[in-house]
Length: 431
Image (cartoon, rainbow, N blue to C red):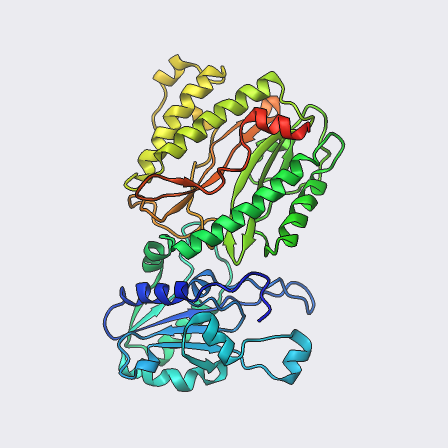
């Protein structure tokens, strides 16, 4: 085994498979494919990242892998089958270690491990003896997919071979089940947050007028890799001055100048689990009075929003309440007028000029993780909390973000130890 991260307790994957299997229709086969390896240019490929659902169910972190669940199979050893790529001497020389059957069993807790080239032969009997086939398409609500992928190709192939079977979506089941985090997952996510904290504290001692945004990014990735993280959970945003008002800025190539604020949105990925942090700091080590006022207004909104994240909260009502609180802060900053607010169109509130994105999203194996925001929040959900105030005419963009675990006994801030008070940030930057 040569994973960068510590081996995950296979109890997680065993229990996850049970949770999914219990929600399938009788006489069903569910199939989960690994991600494709995506070509870059010439003979180069982008770094492989495992399909989150397959990883969540098996812990298998290797290309060309397939998981099959068939809870009603007559033969007990056919109820869970894992197919992995058979290695050989040539593959070992060129690509290194691949799972043996023994290692795949140890990682996943699945006893029936087969070589991938036997998939069609092994699966034909299961398809014939069952009537429902579940396919795991990418149904993330934010997905905008222009290319095909393994699950999609397999669906078309199976429909041509088994046209009278009933085909079902796994997406709604995954949304419900994967969004509720197991205690083992929470431990991994906490570890990712702890690594991200180390990177932020490193940056506080590094940033000063005259450094470039990409140098700040380099400090972050250095801390991630030295702590055995996979790398960035998403493209980092290191935005100084006016760029802090660009929501998805990631050019990260400008000079940080005296008097600028620096908005940073980054998070490490550890064992494929994401963290997601936003902080805004003064390049010179001290906020101007106006910058501090805007910062504290944003922090007030964040603290209020965090208090609302609890089981039973309805997401749309949550966003409306955060919006109302943001209105009062923007009025106090002189950015909007209370009389105009009283006359505003409710479908286009004035605060949206300065806070135009949502406050929270699910977090887990993906930074924008699966979950149904139409249903009330549950214990075990992990949400980001990230209000922002963006004033382009003043070159001030502030965003503050932590990751929040919901429990029956109140929420837990997984980033509670990461400095966020303006005075604490200034103190750390000047010591």
